[in-house]
Amino acid sequence: MPKGLRQRYHETRDEMDGLFTLISSDSEMLEKFTRTVIDEDELKRCASSMTPQHYDSLKRTTERSESVMTHWLGLPVEPADPYQDGKVFILTRRRAKV
Image (cartoon, rainbow, N blue to C red; front, side, top):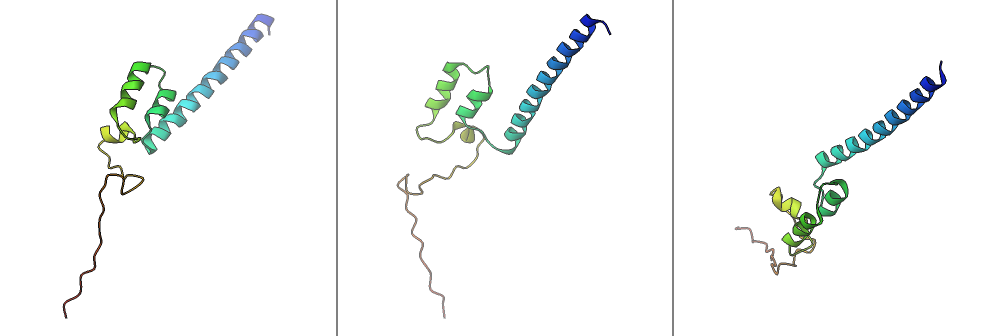
């Protein structure tokens, strides 16, 4: 096999291996996104197209430390501390009628 052809073969093989690694990484990321809701920080790390202004607008949207993603998706978010909103639920037992 000519030297130039062998060199080109190895260069192409290395490029294919790099692309395979990139595709595998992206595939794992997409699989994660289908299993769970990600927060703004994770999105910023994964989305190279997100501008700093967009990220800042996401972080400013919520007053608490909750993720805005769950609100956009309409998912219920239980507070870490059930008393943080000042709501206290008193559970009482009703006596059975005899």
